[in-house]
Length: 310
Image (tube, rainbow, N blue to C red; front, top):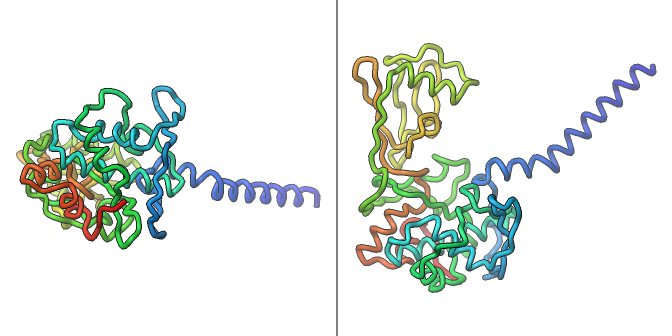
């Protein structure tokens, strides 16, 4: 009887610990490990509330610092887009970064100075960047009167952006595949990696050790499907079918928009574009600006159905 009571109490303790993890710790772990999947606040009408200051975790100092919000946006734009870009492209970046930051704040997520949030620096900010941020002060992207919180962006698309649901877990009406024709000077537009099939196999298996690929050989490597934006959606490798994003991560490719070819026992992966492909192409934005488009036209092109508002 006493032994049975001990077992029951142990079950109770395990149950309580499990509930504490699910309710208290799991949301924190999810935000820290998967910040891009945090649900931003999009269900409430936007009322134009912009914080005067924000707390940002500075990695090098291992502490939070309180920073004026618009100064924070200056530091983000300076870090995320080359200052040599056109003024209208820098303005578009300012609005997108401000919108994304507000989305994180409204969802209760923290701000930091790394790619987990948006890259931020406090020094060496050009007058050109400051001007772009100042001229768009308090402006954000709205969709149907609500903050377009997932205002994602990336470097270059090589022709077309992606639907959000084909890259991330969420589907958002303003993150749909659109053309991105003007990307002059885009870095990493084309990249080639050639390696033996055995090296390719080792890299794939090391990245996904939980899967049973079996013997990977030339005859069982095949792209199965593509996304609307032209990136590899699924690829058969050995006995498994995985995503193009997984291959990108395993091989360190700039993009999941790639082709494969073979010569003997060697495989060549040729990729184009740089980044996840969802939202605004930064080189595309710069190309549109060079063609004479203003920042509002750039933003409404890449974020379909949105408006720029204060």
